[in-house]
Length: 298
Image (tube, rainbow, N blue to C red):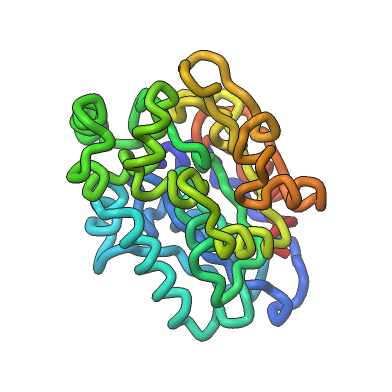
């Protein structure tokens, strides 16, 4: 995520007026792995950018922990289900969000905010924008953001030793969305986060109803992504079961065909938006953000 600051040039802002302050829907953003709520070259930058382009908007950049260091560490080591519960509590207690809000998640923050939408319908999430989120999980850990490479080396070894053991599942964030297409049964049985929100063990009708209440579910895939494996997970696709070479799009997955999350109905209703942007993971220009993402926040 640290690459975001370098990838987004600090251009002279145009000061485009995007409507009166009273009409601005609040925005909640959740950072990715190894980042924090308020890093001035990543989430802090995005927050200021949105605030300048949409005067009067309230932007909440989620912080898990009492400071930025804890927030960053929790992106690796705090049980995702506990993180989602903490966020749901924060949102419910914020008076400025009670009329509804838009949500924008970066990298793993994308699937975490989807869990918020499915599990915590009050206050209501109106639209979800997932920028590089891995909605079918990952099966590979090519590299890490920023200065976290030593952490990633350890994570890779841990995942290789036993991603689905109870201790690893409960204490390693990346294991909780590790999706091994060669061990689908073990994944469905032992994944404490992703298998649950993706309805792999049965149908939670509340999850389905809550997700379908979104006005828009926008998924951004980075077309030259070298961090997410497989990149098609950013559009809710994944490897065909039983191997790790051939991928299938969302529309060819059993999740979609059986409509376990309501994604098929949302797709037919025009609620799903699939966007591609040239560049590596979380590398995009301010111009692209202005022209492509900001319209969904108005």
